[in-house]
Image 1 (cartoon, helix red, strand yellow):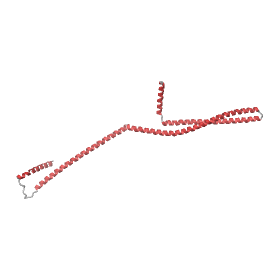
Image 2 (cartoon, helix red, strand yellow):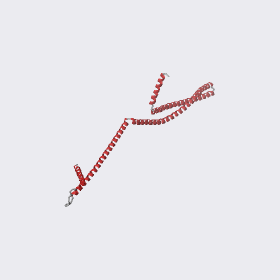
Image 3 (cartoon, rainbow, N blue to C red):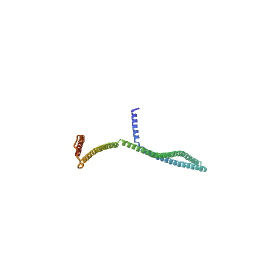
Image 4 (cartoon, rainbow, N blue to C red):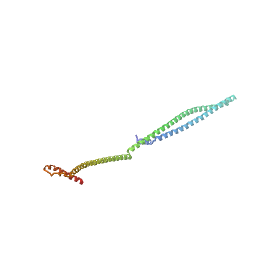
Length: 264
C-alpha cells in the first residue's frame, strides 16, 4: 500500500470519526424527515406533470381520432359524388391522422402505466414519511431520555469526586472528632464528680466518728460534775488503783485530740 493511500485512508477515518461525534440524533432525524418531505414534494410535482402530459396526450389522441373519422366521412362523400381523386386524397389524410392517433394511443398507454406507478410510489413515500415522523418522535424521546440519564450519571459521578463532597466529608470528620472530645470531657467530669462525692462521704464518716467521740467525752465530764453534796470525794489512789492509770492517760490523749480538733 502506497503512502498516498495510507494518508488518504487516515484522513477519511478521522473525518468519519469527527462526523460521527458531531452527529446529533435529534437533528439528524429532523433533517432526514425534511429531506423526505422534499422528495415527496418533488415526486408530487413529477406525478402532477405526468398526469398533465397524459391529459394532453389524451386530447391529442381524441383529436387525431376525430380528424381520421372526419376524413373518412369526407372520402365516402367524395366517392359518392364520383370524385375518386378527392376521395383518395381524403383517405390519405385519414391514414395520416389514424397513424398519429395510433402513436398517441401507444404513448398514452405508456403514460398511464407510468402515472399509476408514480402514484403508488407517492403513496408509499407518504406512508414512509408518516411512519418516519412517528418513529422520529419516539427516537427523539429516547434520545432525550438517554441524554438526561447520561447527564444525571455524570452529575452523580462529579458529586462523588468534586471538592464539595470532599468538604462534606471533612466537616463530617470534624464533627465526629468534636463529639468524641465532648464525650471524653463528659466522662472525665463525671469521674471527677464521683471522686469529690467519695471524698465528701469519707470526710463525713470521720466527722461523725469525731462527733461521737466528743459526745462521749462531754457525757463523762457531766457525770463527774453532777455528784450530789455530801457525797464523798474519790478516795486517794491506792496501790490497787494503779491499774486504772492507763485509763487516765487515754483520757488525757483524747482531751488533747479534742483540743486539736477544736482548734482547727
